[in-house]
Length: 286
Image (cartoon, rainbow, N blue to C red; front, side):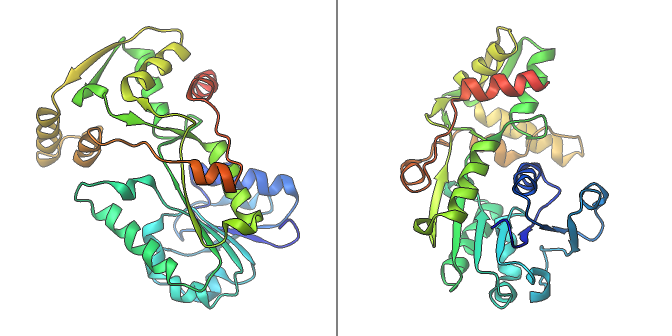
């Protein structure tokens, strides 16, 4: 893989930053797909070839030309727009990052779009692997645990809609990267799908307490009935106030986010770090 360019979509994103660092460390060229209006100077300064394209719309096969390996990080739902062009591009191996959110029972246009894209990819003759991470964390850019840690640094309590009894299984970004590269390199992973999470599932209350402990703090968890929390977020958005979360995100707190990582452990030798270790490292970065 080091001799041939590796094409990376979503190249300015949180996960892509970790992927690209690994690719550069291997010494191979990288081609980054970046939306036309984004500033990619920091990629170009490192000798990374930047290719401008908006993958939320149909594109031609030339966008993917010149590489035999593709890592798609720009959103699984987008693939339906260009999968036909992608099939004609000559790419030989691809990893697509989807989400464990496809398992939601809630009515979700985002989850349904991912499911449709996954189904389309299964009909493709391409050699692909689909990875479905649970909640990704690992640095101050992760949008998940970083928000919780910053809250805990300021406040000694956390309001939790639904009480925090549902199970979570956060996966560290570096462990997700391990799985990506293993999927690219292992023939057994061709045309397979893997769910990725931490080594064990944890109630949300334990996730919060572990995050507080990583900061050397104690925390008071304040349960909030789910329905009033949903109505509050709905009202805030209706009257134009900035809501910290979407209505769907609140409702998802009543759904388990636990996943089965058995197949990934077997085929990819996936060995995720404990949440205690991962969140301590992230807290130290803050």
